[in-house]
Length: 72
Image (cartoon, rainbow, N blue to C red; front, top):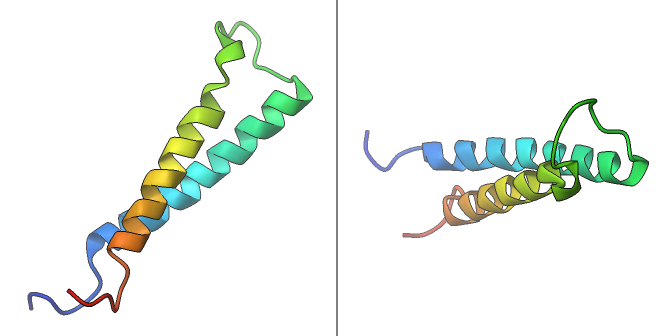
């Protein structure tokens, strides 16, 4: 059973890529529109943009590294 199938890291990478992209797009929208939740400090750091980008890049790295059909 070892070595046959798709690695779990590929699916984790896909999830990180999807969630990171969603958070990044929301952060860019929030930054451009200027609509921020009331009472949130340090909104000028734009954390959704940073964290969404980091998650998406990490997910892309996992998807590329552990893609199915890749020779070992």
